[in-house]
Image (cartoon, rainbow, N blue to C red):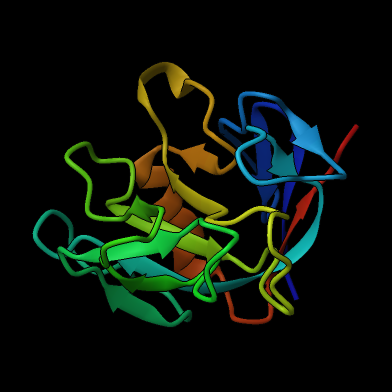
Length: 167
């Protein structure tokens, strides 16, 4: 079993290789809450991979891969039963659009944070995704260059985890 490790605010390690990354604007937290801008500390499974089929080819990986559809969103409204789930866009739901104009969500690794069980308000939509230019901070996700995500995915297995250290 392999582990992706976030060892500092800008360093990710996997299979003896170090990658530059970005994390949440407010750092890493042991007490993540919705909209606090932190990346949650802890060890988590990687659930699946989502990608934009109109922009990039499907990644080579052992993980479950699903193409995004134009109306896919991630519910981040703690008052809804769909909280912290990928759903189709619906009126009345606060949600994170997955089909974006920029390229940040062209490739997404869904991290198993707050999903078993889901606790309202503990945080949602924690992903590993494409980094902004100059690795600007995220709203709580982990972000890497697209090429680095593809490289990691090639050997990532369903039993592998991500360990986010709050040092």
